[in-house]
Length: 168
Image (cartoon, rainbow, N blue to C red; front, side):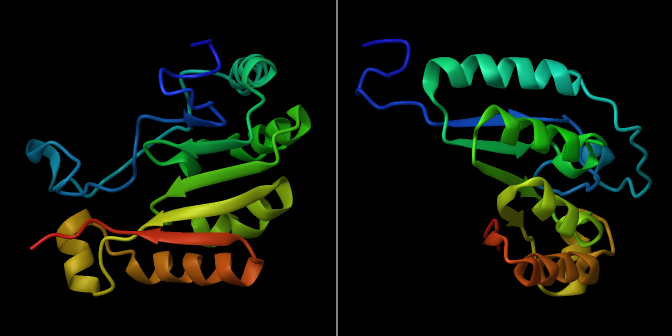
């Protein structure tokens, strides 16, 4: 076994980078029950690391592992205000496949900029396609905005995957 392989001789080609520990939803499967009814949300876009710190870490790991893919996640990664320059920096490092996992609440306003910056694919977590059920799960009235963001992603030609949590 080497630093670039696990005990089964698998190599590490994908790096998951969590940009925030905050989300703009209050899903009942994710949020502490004491705050699950919270409907007000405020986030200032600050992160634990700066873009340069993220890029230094990614570049260092890329030199060792020859990464093929970076997956940007959170919380909600689109809350990270410097996500576009970060994506551009990752592309300059030489990593071609940049993927984002998102709840899609902010996708509608950002998808074409994400495409321009170099996003390869987007994974959307979709709780429901019925507005009342969606609200019951995530405590927000934003299903139309989410569905519009999904459609814009398709229109932009970005690979898209929709994931859901199946519940009774």
